[in-house]
Length: 443
Image (cartoon, rainbow, N blue to C red; front, side, top):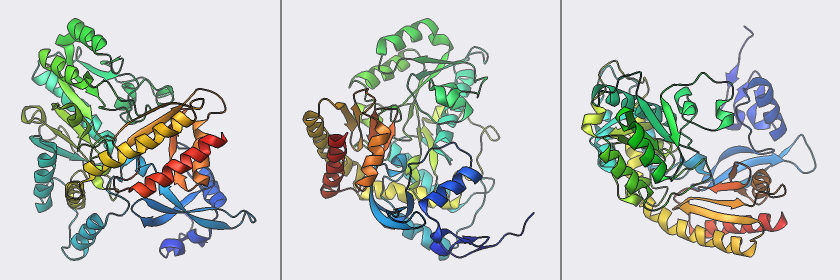
């Protein structure tokens, strides 16, 4: 192995003599292409450097006159790490909690095979905010869905007495639950599935927001179905909002057929849609729910599964585990992420500012009806969809917004998703809206 040298911090961080602060956006791209796996396609010609405030990033772009240099610019964060930073970049309350617990409280790192006192704080906070009986901590958002899947299957086997080779788990078309093998087994997205088969058996899909299709499936195969797994709003699909009566009818159907209802709140939870959790907008209580992203306040990856006691209790020692799921630092961060959600009234602000953003998007759609087909959203989970024409390219819009100081990202070809921090204010929404108006006008 060649000699390795690592030193410095920030711009001075150097690896084998390469000072990170000296690299241009093109050089960063070259390193990623040559040294990294190509499972993402980042926006071109921009490298995020640091945080200015809760909704603003500082980024580096190519110098207009010299390819070997860069310029620094501000970017209004309109994506919020796919709703992982609902509390705002570097939320001071969470940062202070981390620093104090590491430096003054001498926070240990221990696994779940021994108890630590911070787990109690997290469990008390998480069951309180979710209204659920029990919580199981995990790390990545997809892990919360994966555990929901496993719990659903075990409940079907142990409680509903479905033979294991007959058990069915039901999902909705257009879903996005992550990219683990089980998650892509439930997906109908070609890019997520290509080359990864054979897939997990015992999974069927029904059209999203189609209660008749679900009812027919339950009536025909209900004795074999353990669980229906669904997003309250489909984020990755383009912020697809179901009919107001969809989830209440789903909930009642599940009760009628003794089928668990599992909601995926990874992207829609923690105030994003104007309620603490999106299913609350429909006044229902699922049997089990998965949370992630903003559960860690943008500081750490934190996720968890919350559910009814009799459902969570199908887990037994050795049937499930996670080295870093609920370890001390994650428990502190998760607890303070909930504290910020409640004390800073983030759901209320998402509802207020989301209504304002949607009114602005509607105005832009009415101004350019030949370009924008539809606006959608709840709270600050919003999107606008353009007509399906070659010139109306969502990626081109994302790049255009970068040139006007806004970071957002398309999903699919014609839809641009907007999910800013829940701390955003009216003036920042005006900035975001004007950037969209300008870019759409120039298409």
